[in-house]
Length: 207
Ligand SMILES: [Zn+2]
Ligand SMILES: [Zn+2]
Image 1 (cartoon, helix red, strand yellow):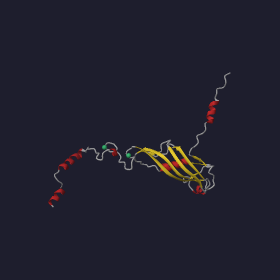
Image 2: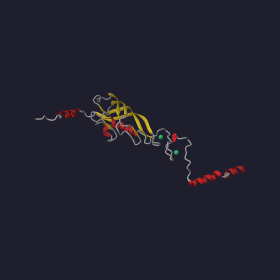
Image 3: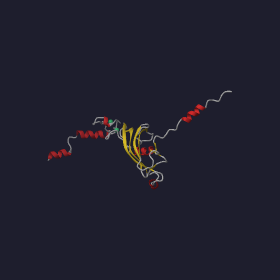
Image 4: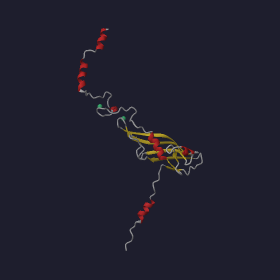
């Protein structure tokens, strides 16, 4: 009789595959609830895909550098420090690619369940400690996304594109223009050019 197919190895490998831990989650067991206790976090994490607005954002997988201090306070856990991210996008005026970076201060209270802060705040007004951990990602995402410019520019005074030829004005000579006159105006322009003098000029001569 043939032996049973070796299905055990497959089952074993899937059983040993551990679920991917959320890297933005901070366990608070170490910190404890004693006011004044502190924990420092330095992590570099890959950016999630949605840290962006229409024209600019953190590239997915880009390095998000965190330097945070978690402090146990009466009402919860105070998270402070800074976050640094790379940015890529395109100029709202000339569409040139933009590469930049952003560093932001972090200062956020995560309220304990049952704390006065939690009890007196609306659902979306305050972040919460969830059981024995807190999740840094939604807080950092809001912080980063809210500070992204809706109309980023490649340089502070980017002149945009020429409306006639679509080239970047910053790369064109200052006197760039298109000598294409509307035929209806071409005749007028010719008359002005050949006029012997303006009435103003005549008056000046008489005085
Ligand atoms: Zn530009
Ligand atoms: Zn042009």
